[in-house]
Structure formats: structure tokens, C-alpha cells
Length: 412
Image (cartoon, rainbow, N blue to C red; front, side):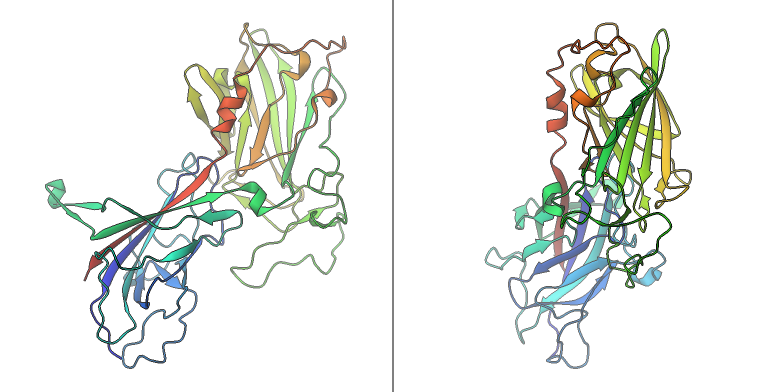
């Protein structure tokens, strides 16, 4: 069988999540063809399986699978195989961290497997691909929707060409789809109270329970404590045995109080015995973040600014300094100190006000201690903090995580 006319299809993947990146081994884009399409060639990515191409002679297609799975090429791929924004191993930065690396793209040449038939993508009756998947835990994708064709500037922007057809697919993330158990917890302490409030017991599952990760005591090396063999195999959550059983613990310490400022130390500990966390993010919600003055050794960016509300921000590591949170051990932590200005209208140490309302690590919400466990002032005051009813609005806007795919086709 010989090939007929081909359609050049450009696929773009955008990570519009503000603070949740896509880590190694990266995305694996899959779909099911609506007709008898085959992929003759690929640039910037490759199919994981070639499939059964026995009906073809001479030139053999790149992939004959009815449901292909495409992965990004690794850095250092030959120039002849590259396209713009490719070859990152499937890793995508979050939009807040790095607006230059939140986008990936690749190109495929698509034809039909039936003799004498050509694929007319501009025909409304041409069946669309369906059953899109991103190959990442917690993500589900929509059907392909026809949108206005993408336009491409030419001749210095004086002329524009456009694709014959553009489809849009959105993939959304849910923490509860990925895992029934949380992945992180929060502990608290202050300079005015010796009590250290630990993470709640069984925050991420109790030892031995089905939802909890496997654990090992420090210094032990059980048989399951080994890295996966394949590049694409996920690294399992094997943590140090603790009361909370979480891979990640965030500790918030109220360190100092000055006349016009107050100082907080934040430490992130990794209890995962096999996994490093690269390009990690920490999202904090606190009403005084609108008066944040200085951050030491972390990057910071406000996330939600609505009128005079600015109570949520994202922290992440400095490149080549602490952007990698190493596995459990002596160096398995990163820390910062933040300086905040006291706002007379809202500032108080009473009623747990200086502690964060919510914290998330890598886009997953952490388990907080209950308010009745918060360290109290020496006087034992039980006064409530000032009314702060607007706090829910900022966080509600953060629950939707979306990755968009743009699929553009043109005739070769």
C-alpha cells in the first residue's frame, strides 16, 4: 500500500495552571482516531508504539495504532527531529514560575490507511479524534471542539496564513482523582509559646492502611526501597515512618515581632525516601500577604489580586540554588524567611490569626491542624481574629487547573 496526500498537523500543549507544573516523566498525549488515520511522520515527539503496519510496503508509517500515545522528545534530540518548543522530556513549567517554558509543541504528518482515500480535514463530516488523555494522574480531558482556525504571521507580520481547521481540547486536574489521601501536611510553632503543633496524626493515612504510602524507618533498607527500572515508571511514594505519613511537611514558625513588622520562617521537609521534587511550588493564603515586604531565598509572586484583596501567593525555589527539594535525609529540606508589615486595622496575634489559612504544595492542598490546637498567647487569650469573610473568594479561584491542547491541520 502506498500513501496518499498527507495533512501536516501541529499540536500545541499549554500549561495554564498558575502553580502546578508537569514534572518528569512528563505528559503522554493519547487519543483515538475517528477514522482510518495513520501517522506517517513525527517531529518534536514520537509515538510509544509503532503498531501493526503490515499492510504497508515500501515506506512504513511512524505509527499505525488506532489509539496512539505520543511523548515529547528528550533534550538533546537531533536537530532534524526537533520543532519549536519541543524536546523537554514532557516537562512543563507552571505559568507563574516560568512563562517561557509552559508551552510544548510537535508536528505529525497524518494520512489514511485506506487505498485511494484522502483525508479532508476541512470537511465537517470528517470524524474527529476522541478519548483524549494526558497520561498524568488526576487529569481528565474533554472532547475536541472546533474553534476559529489558528493564524500564522508571515513576512514580518504583513501577511497571515491560517490552518484549515483547529480543534481545542482542555484537560483539567483534580487532586481527588489523583489520590484519595493527601500528600502533605502543616505543622506550626511560635516564639511566644514552647508548644510545637505537629501535623495531624494520619494526615496522609495511617501506617498499614491501604491509602497510606509504604514507609521505612531511618537507616533501614527494605526490599521495596528501590528505584523503578524504566524511564517512564513512576517513582513510588515510600516515606519515612512518621505519625503523619506524608511525603511533604510544611512548617510555619512565627519567629519574631518588631514594632512595625513581623517575621515568619517557612521550612519544607521531604520525607519521601526515593523522590526529589524539582521546580516545586508552595501556595500560601494569609490576609497579611498583601503587605509582604521581603522574601529571603525563595521567589514569590502574588496569585490573586481582586480589588483590594491580595491574600494568596506562590513561592518557589531559586534556579540552581534550592529549586530541587532533595529526598529524605540531611539535605531534604528548603527554607525561607518572610518579612511582613503589620497592618494596624487587621494585625493581631490572637485567635490564630498569624497562621496561614491554607497551604498547598505542588498544587495539592495540605492538611492543617485544627484551630483549637494553634499555639496560644501566654495570657491564654481566646479572642477571635478580625472578621475576614473575603478569604474564601481568593482560594475558590484556584481549584481549576487546566491544560489546553491546540491541534492545527494543513495540507502538505
